[in-house]
Length: 435
Image 1: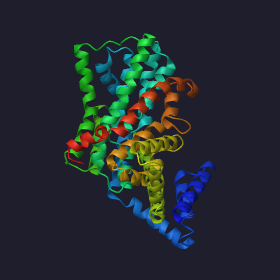
Image 2: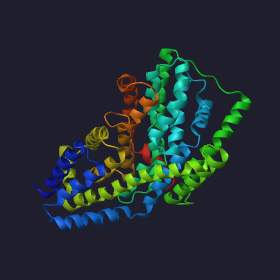
Image 3: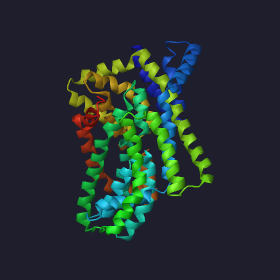
Image 4: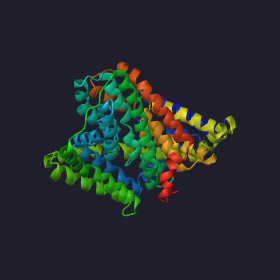
């Protein structure tokens, strides 16, 4: 057995064993990687090299963007914008059958794009609009399924921390290009779910919700504008080259802090220490994961494991459609039992070289991978967004899975389009000159 396959088998066996034993994913990544390199290096050099890789992995300037985007998301989550975005979304969906479900979808897309968190979107929107839907006679499981299926769209529509993580682990892919590439796939995800909700609503006879009157429209619009401006300021500034992604993250924090404290007045100064602590804890988890994943990336590169896997996969078929289908299936399976960040850190170095051999742009592959992992957030057994959506929807997973299957079918259809039609991801980055 070659060194590459021995390292790969060691990583797989040790990693799965530690995870099944309940060891934290970051520790499991570090231990499995060190074990994989021991047949080549002695214990002391392996440990020293591992420590060096952790330090070099987190000593990247662009990583500063992650804690700031997390803090901005937490400020906005607590800043009372959810109800304003729901009211804003209703301006466009009020006359459609099943209007409240469509409002939930549009609001999830907007809120996720601002907060960058699928679980936050599912929690905020489900808690607010779910009781209204139940009062209007909507089936509780249908309402929860709509909320769950569309909450991950904010992970594709920027800003998105997992895109920053992918940009770093893929070897310098443009963050701005990834941000631009995520818009159309994220919007298509939402539109596909709206089509399913429309058919279901027509079948069940869910009526439209009506629209606001003239003055109410103006008031609703202006109340939502400050929240929506965050997208324009941050993403627009990055695209126009006014500031980098890191500087854009800082701008997002400053803007969301001013908006929440002084405009909406939904956060008090006394709330800030708790918000800062929550943000610091989440940042610590993600940064440590990135650090220990650098050990695994180095082990894979040292043993040429990605090259060995590329040869095997390309040996199965020389048809790019078949290879991409296999990668999609593997990523979908991975997403069911692994969170997005560690999955991105582990499998990008494995599958990206294969896709490069097929002539696939790293930006296109990144969006395809993130799309797959977003689906994993709404599938058991580790679907965090699924669990949050079920909880706030006051229902059970077994009752929601039935309605969710129709949304899964629509989402899988969009995934195939994103995979096999590069223009879906690459058109906007191409227009702005990033690719």
